[in-house]
Image 1 (tube, one colour):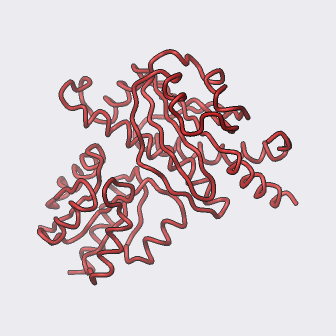
Image 2 (cartoon, helix red, strand yellow; image 1 turned 180 degrees about the vertical axis):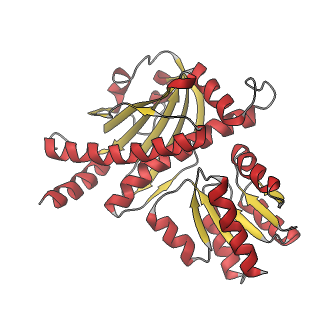
Image 3 (cartoon, chains in turn purple, yellow; image 1 turned 45 degrees about the vertical axis):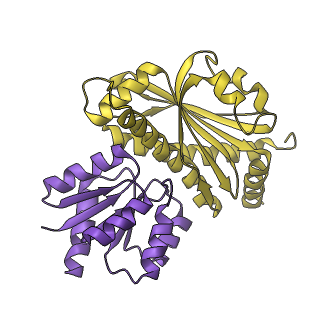
Length: 121
Length: 198
């Protein structure tokens, strides 16, 4: 079973996103901000990371930079409300493998995740 | 700001229309229901006079506001009458009633909706302008607009106020999107529009 770590400060968003992933057979972990996300990435070594940007304590861009600097190989999918082209470009240049905007539909999210996990494995 | 011409105001309205249209699409995806929008209105005024431009300033609202800064700055607010906030929460979460013991889920749900809508509106505008802005973490309030506006960091400033109403008629839910742009922001947008029209 492939595992996914959702890093998002919104309990609502974690709930909305995790339900279809679990229904699809993924094991889902949750982190409530960037610091918690980094801890859980090292602890759980998920197959894929779903990363929000705007979070307290440490935001998603900082997490992405730290992962990039550390030579991360786990695919990171940005899942954010920020629709700006400049943000998308920055995330992709920092190593994100995909950039999706909230609200995302399950039939948009799951193929992206499946494709990235399949490529890595 | 008095020098802003009607064609520039029209251009600003068109930018806002595009942004608000995108936000309606996001709300439609979130709720699974058709979302109706009223034509946005724009007013130039002093922040201290803003309460006269908005409905029922002394009545309690659920308000989520989110500041932004960068190429232009200001704040954006999503305002709901209490009953609409509850209706939207129930629609989004599938809960049967407002939770008495899970305030976090309540606030996070409404805050996340506001975050998505504000980003859709402002992000669409910045994309067209080829600019970038940074968003702050949204803030949740249950208060009268009188109090919320009195606490604003823009108090005393000249601002442009853009506001529109959205409705999910099938569920009797309505809310208001209010965007405040500072003088500098308006000038940045006006420059862009003037260049485009040249």
